[in-house]
Image (cartoon, rainbow, N blue to C red; front, side, top):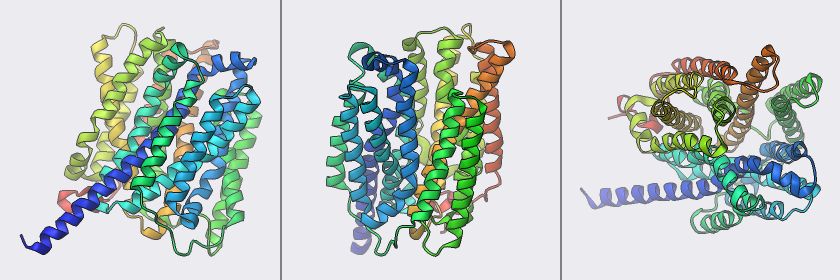
Length: 481
């Protein structure tokens, strides 16, 4: 090997290490953000007692967080380009961490709601801007590993959050469910300052204010409608009204973005098949099924099996172990089989494992339950990583910011849509029996419906070209000699 080749390989190795370090730094902040969204639900009754209100009143804290996040997500890409992704990412962590402190110190519901709104604003910028940082620091050959690193918080935090939150609430107090973010946030800020380089676009253009207002309002109304459909607050008319408003405003925003010269969001990314399929069409349906499962499983074990929250948590830890175990083999499997086969075949496995969960019962041997949950966790992890990586396989530098923002918006919709569909099936099945609460048979229908959605989306991925994303996956059959 020549000196030049040795030097080049050294630079590539150093670049690869830098990309991994940046991805790990971003993942730490993502974990704090996603953990917060799942851990708080376990302490709502205790918080209600502390504030002197009814437990049902505490749902506004979750709703306002989600709505402020929806309102600011469309702005994230432009802010990152205008002021620098590193600077905006640091600001988002600082805002989120500071708001977490004041949430934990809140003495009334009004205070708590105010700081949850601030928390939501910080959260809105964190995910898309953090992803932009990873995309800018990783070459295509490093993208699978980098995306896998920033995907694990979305896989693990929803599973361990309720268990950890229940433990903290039981043995400490609800305040620590928020105060736990302080050391994580400080660590995240220190790591960003140390390891993440600054990168800024030279000419991001003026802010498209009309596009921001239309897209923010459209996304907010859509997510509000889905959130109401899960809780079924206020009847059908408010849900349909908000859904209609969200659709109309989203259509207006789309028409605006296509008509102006410097739109807030560049929709040209949707002309790229790998991006549109992994985020908009099959990707949305697939994420619906994946995101509905962590919502259904705790309810199945507690309401269907009659287990305590701690006992249900032990089953969920097996599910988490499956998520975690797949990381080591994700890159080799994508290199060997390619995105099309992995998304199609692994997607079918994930969907069928979801259907299988619907046929579990208290009489099912624990070993079989553990095996099925472990398989569901394995396939869920693989599908998430493959989806999130393929989405940016063919995205050019000029499209990164808008593509990351669009992806975050659609992921929020798919997350709530999955929960809304699962909750709707449970409610309909219970209503047919004339009961208020779901039983084991109702969960079976919910898992079947969600699983069928997963099956259909998996078959859709088989329409991808055999070499889709090969430059990123390193699929050996399509690599140039």
